[in-house]
Amino acid sequence: MRYIKLILCTLVFTIILTGCDNLTAEPPTQITDVCVLLGDFSNAKDADLSAISECVDPTVNSKVNFTIYALDGAPEDIVLTSEYNNGNRTSPDVMRDHYGKFVHNDLIPKINNAVPNQEEIDILNGLYMAEKHLSKSKADCKKLLIFSTGIPTSGYINFSNSSNIINYNDDELDSLMQEFKAKNLLPNLTGIEVYWFNICETVEPQITPNRANAVKIENFWKNVFANCGVDEKNISFNYSILDSKNSSETDKYPFVTPVMFEDEEIIWCFTDETVQFNPGESTFLNEELVYKTLKPYAEKICDTTSKKFILVGSTATFGDKDECLKLSLERAEEVKKVLCKYGVLPNRLLTFGIGQNEVGNNLTNRVVDVENGSFVEELGKLNRKVMVVDASTALGKQLLQELEN
Image (cartoon, rainbow, N blue to C red):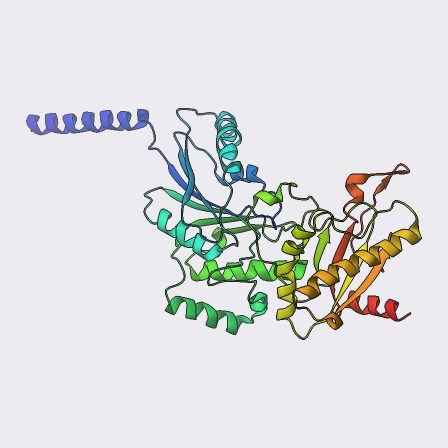
């Protein structure tokens, strides 16, 4: 009996010591693997990369691996990788501050230097890259961050060929997904958290989809992710239809084919930054560049043989009103000439000049370019534009009526 008691005491003592060791041991390192698909193009607004800070909540001894891919027409190569390690920091405020500094001082500068090389946007292929990388990961948590307009222009999902895909009813969309699955075209993203930023945030000439179309685009991608195995509660979209513009360095980004969405009144808008005229004239500043810029838009118009369009010229609130009215019409006529040289029939394009005026309840989205009685050039250039309006819409019909009068 004495021996049994001795053995039991030894066991109890051992258990107590083991328990104490567990209490003092450091918690295991929590590893998060983040895959970033970066779609920074001439048709997209600047990505708010600070959002990366909000997607990962650093914990004690946490380690975060970042892998970034360029979401262009051929997203094959890793742009860069970066690693964050929280070390032994314990204060939540200190941890978040340390992680925030890593994102802003290390990660974002690297991403800003990574510019896509190939024309067009192939989002589905980008998802393949994410699957390939994350499927090999042994991380405790896997996240996919997408910075893109959500408007693909190449690959199996291509809005430039069929933007009406977002108008599919449930049965049509389900049939399409089943077809993709049968052909093994959808990646397996089971267990991955998805955060999508900058969806539908475009810059001219690509018109920002209206709220109805933006919601359709979001729902379309929700359906795609659901068929890729992503839990609905793990999908987060962020789109705000902002007023801010992309940087003026759009020439460094690859070209993206324009997409024409249904139910949009203004199809495209050529501002002073995309189609430049000589000051106060209807002649182009760089005619060769204008022809190159307008060619894909002419091709899209030729593809829509049943539609007619109105080219609406607008000017800044500067100078004589009558002269501005005349100038806006002349500029619309010049854009028409270029489009017609690429095969658009002249009778499909009407021209209209509004000068400094507004149409209806500011349907042409003019901005106020006068502050405290003085003209502001930076705002005025936003009003110097030629818009392509669908003649069958309410705005188009109103313009046609004014043309008849």
